[in-house]
Amino acid sequence: MNPLETLLQARLREGPVPAADVMALALYHPGHGYYRRAQGPWGFEGGDYYTALDLGPLLGEALCLRLLRAWEDLGRPETFTVLEPGAGRGWLGRDILQAATGPFAEALRYVHRDDNPAARAAAGEALAPWPDRVRFAAEGEALPPFVGAVLSNELFDALPAQPWRWDGARWTREMLTPDGPAWLPGEPCEATAWFAAHAQDGLESGDGAPWCAALPDVVADLARPLEAGLFLAIDYGEQASRLVDKGADLRRYKGHQVDGKWWEDLGDSDLTADVDFTRLASLLGGHGFGPAATVTLSRWVREHAPLGEWEEAWASLTPAVRIQRMENLLQLTLPTMMGERFRVLEAWKRA
Ligand SMILES: C[S@@+](CC[C@H](N)C(=O)[O-])C[C@H]1O[C@@H](n2cnc3c(N)ncnc32)[C@H](O)[C@@H]1O
Image (cartoon, rainbow, N blue to C red; front, side, top):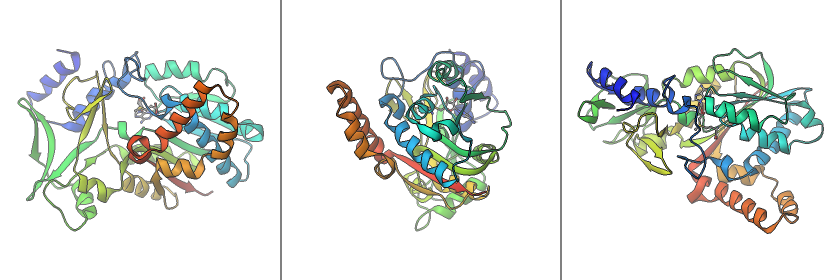
């Protein structure tokens, strides 16, 4: 039995354990959590999952252009800080820093924030070429106020979340019992009130969604230091009404296979939950951000990527690299790949 399963067995002797607590243990236990291990889980060969960054530099290049426009909108401040929470290996920061040129590059500062030790080590290497522009911040560290952007890729789907389900007569939540997972009755609470308010045409049996209890604190922590600028989050997820309609689940990624067995392989596989973009937007509104816009990744890339410039630049690449770039673009935009499954939320805070 692995050490996390031993810990969980002890908790199960006291009663059923909420799925969100199992997810928190599996991902963030200080010694054995999936995101607290010395060895990274990313990549194709031998990894559990890949993100948009494994596919090539195009997302970073498109984001660089988006950040350049944000810098211009803000009146070209002398320093434009990009804070990336959940920055993992720092590859997005690397791709953005690599793509930045001219006075914008001079103004750009990048703050990597992720306590994942494997990620931090990989990011140290990836970001080494920019020692004067990069800073590493710990998760609990209070950041000084800055102007610029908060940018994240797959941060919010990695926060522990509790699946809730309406069974036709009452609210139930997914728990682990000594006999396995089970949906057990739960008291009405903020989560159930939110789901009921966002159920289209009333609640039907099976409706429900994952509820991230930590979301308000995480958003407050990120929103507070940004004096003015852009909040941009890329993640799996939906608007609240679609999520509630779809029904709740947690997903487990292991060796590029996905299933719903969140209680197995604790600490050895990734767990993720859909992000509620309506709630994220509403929380940002409470911190002085204007109305958020959320679009599919496909639409966002088509709106913001310098497609014409890319076509010209790719002409001078070797055929193998040119094909890689095309595949990178297809992955980001095709509906069956990342194009429709991922969404991009943007919200502005004005000074
Ligand atoms: C799914 S990974 C994404 C990594 C990277 N953004 C990428 O796209 O490859 C999620 C990361 O978020 C980090 N994380 C979770 N909660 C966090 C928080 N409150 N602040 C900063 N990082 C956090 C985890 O340690 C993990 O490395």
